[in-house]
Length: 248
Image (tube, rainbow, N blue to C red; front, side):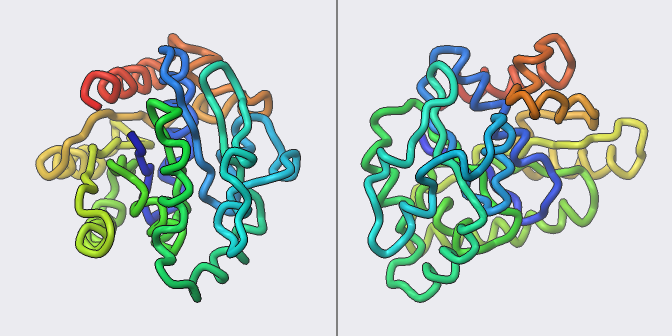
């Protein structure tokens, strides 16, 4: 099962969601590969690593003369591997733009290792770029973190249109797994109203309240679910992971 964690808006918790779900799934004896498809390398850094600590990265998979994807996979924890990213990914995006079947480069690579994992999670960049299209073309499901604000809610329509385009062009089986409401401020009236709209239109599989605890510990490479598993945010990510394991 390949899951793209995507939203064209930045700062909505995509990387935090990818990091915590991957760690929690791995803790439940699921074999997990996390793919950092963002040139900012936030997922790589969240595991306590520097982007250039690794000899190879996602860039080496996407170039015209790629190396084997197996050489770009690094073990991080028990049951958890990562394909890291670095700043060179921006130039790779330019190279991809001029190629035929450019949306399917990542898909072809991941198919070679998909059978080795229960879940492959792709942390998408915060825009509808060629890298996002590659992730959607490779994915079975899309998981959408979305802050319950009006602009974020309206932005989901653009992402839905892109998903429909990918379905028609290269990946007819692609489906939206659900939406995770992130950075939720329970005392803000407007956010409660938008959360209601999200729940009416989408399958909201989790609600993550805004908290500074989400990013504490990343300097040590620890997700909040492992650093402090009793926190409400950790419990919510655990419930989301349980939902995924029970349904997919």
